[in-house]
Length: 126
Image (cartoon, rainbow, N blue to C red; front, top):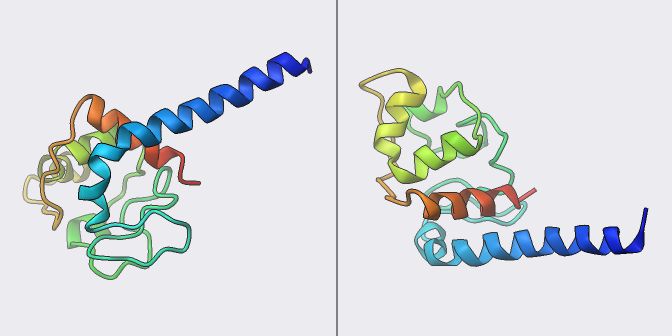
């Protein structure tokens, strides 16, 4: 492979990660109040989010999941996570198919570009 192509690919990956991390910085303090993000990090009020993308909802050893989330049958993909960070109270109902489903997590109101930035950041945690 051409060195220029390798360099361009590496730069793209670094830039994408930097942009995602930078864009997430505005929401980070709110998220850090309840979550940790490093591999092997401890749970806080909410679960550690390292590796959350692509995992089954409610599948970690976190002990404080609500009943609806613990029984969650969905995977945290981009679409589901964007809905969740925008309005977890509405998302839990849609994701479970249960109009009475509840979550302990409050509405984060991080929608649109803010949700995109959070999801991009979470996708880097692998």
